[in-house]
Amino acid sequence: MALYRWSNGRIGASILGWPRARILLLDHVGARTGLRRTSPAIYHQADGLLAIVASKAGQPTNPAWFHNLRANPETTVRIGAEIRPVRARLADDAERNRLWPSFIEAFPAFDFYRRNAPGREIPIIILDPR
Image (cartoon, rainbow, N blue to C red; front, side, top):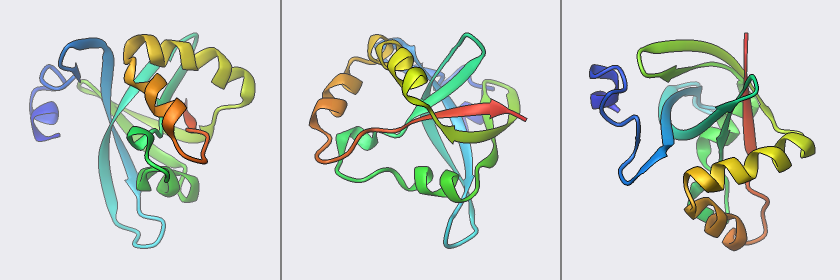
């Protein structure tokens, strides 16, 4: 994350070998601790929507940042040099159905994660501008 910040996203802007798997830095406040944290996340931006996936590589639980966003949805993201204030919310069914193919096209491992996430539906989070 330090290189991403230092280079304004020129280093670390995508996953090596997957140029369409673009990375943003997501700020979030701990639901229990109140501590401010930052996590990298693959994002998709199209049709006025900015979205991220809480895949945790298909593990049985959601990532901690997902729980933090549910408790504290008003936050910021950094895309390259730009810092954007956003409000996080779960994608509705129509948004989810429209976005999944784009995420899988950008990073095919998401399809594996989705099929192998034991007992959970992997959330897609919309980051609405505020």
